[in-house]
Image (cartoon, rainbow, N blue to C red):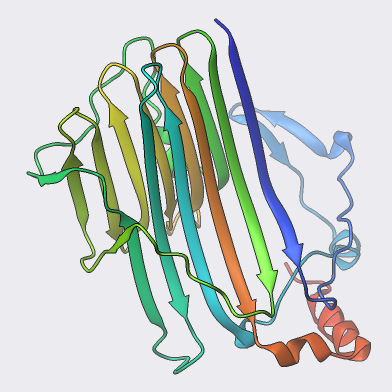
Length: 270
C-alpha cells in the first residue's frame, strides 16, 4: 500500500503587530506518568503557569468571525468532487445580535429523504465515530488502497482588514438541520447545521468518505475534525479549514503598556 499523506494545522497569518507570541515551556518527561488509559500529565505548579504565554486577542474588538471548509477530491476515474461550506458571523453592527450567514456548494445533487445516512461501513476500514468525542484539532487518515494522496490543513487568519466573503458558486443555507443530498452518480453529501456544530460528510460508494466538522461539547469543549477514509486506489484528497478573525482597525494602535497589562492579567490563571 502506497500513500502520500500530510497533516498541517494552525498557521497564523497576522497583520496585527500587537499580538503576543511567546513560547510555552514544555514539561519535563519525568512529570508524565503512564496510567491504565494512556499518558496522564501531572499538575502544573503556579510558578510554571506564571511563566506561560500564548496568543490572544480582545474579543470585544472582533468585528467578523468566519469558518470555511473545503474539499477537493479527485477520483481514479478523473472525476472531481468539490465541496465547500462557509459559516460567517458579522459583529460589526449590534454585538448582541451578530448577523450569521451560511453557504454550501450548489452542485451536491437533489435532497433525499432523511433515511439516507451515508454511514454504511467501508470494507477494510474501521469505524471512526469515536473521533467526535476527542477535543482539539483531530486529523484522521485511514487508507486501504494504493497510490493515494491525502492532505489535511487548518489555517488561522487574523487581520484588521475588512473580510471579503467569497460566495461565488455557493447557495445559502437557511435551515438549522441535517440535509442529505445525492447526485446521479451516487455521490452522497450530508450537510449538518445545528447547536452541536456545523460541517459536512461526502460519501462515494465503495470508494471512500470525507468528513469535515466543527462541533461543541459540554464534556470535551468541542473539536475540529478532518477525516478521510479510503477503500480504493489513486485518490487525491485535499481538505482545508480556514478560520478568519477580523479586528477593528483601532486595535492595531495599542500601546506596549496595554499589552503588558493584558499579559499580567493572564499570569497565574488555572
